Length: 259
Image (cartoon, rainbow, N blue to C red):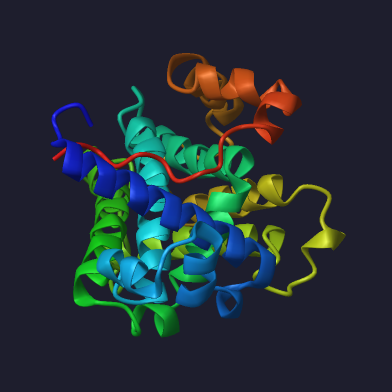
């Protein structure tokens, strides 16, 4: 932010205040509870001032979701660089998503709610493009791991099954399970003792079903997770071991990167 002009810093700071109020309104009343008028009233701004920053409430919400998505993406990219065989790296990416949800449940919920197609369709093309870029990068990370597994001889996909279709299977299992925890889907996840464990088990079953080596019967993936926690996510694990630190962790909009 130091490289920005004073005027640009002021605009950036005001963007942050607007997005923080949008986040609070979203948490209190859902999508319908967010209006430009309410944001303006909460900040003591005119509606015109808000429109100078965001052309509609959907742009504000998608900007908020994109910032959180970029934080989640950073977790996934760190995990994908983990030293290990391709399936270990896939396990690492799954664990990264789990850690993100554990540490930032509010942000994860906002991503799931705001990224709905109906909300996207009401936003500007620029905001949709930013969110789409995040999705493409996440898909690229996961698909790249699958391709590495094929190139290394650890995985051979049957005819009719593409890299994208396999990665979609992992995505559906993971995000479907997490959506039940966030209350976005009404599937009775409460009947399960540990949804995170169920997601991991089902993803391992899917990988085993496609013959992705090392199979779960051949490899100690719990040891892989312990190594991941020590080598890549040691700070995040320390925070999880201190519930009060997680509960009080900042949930406001993260600062934009300097461009």
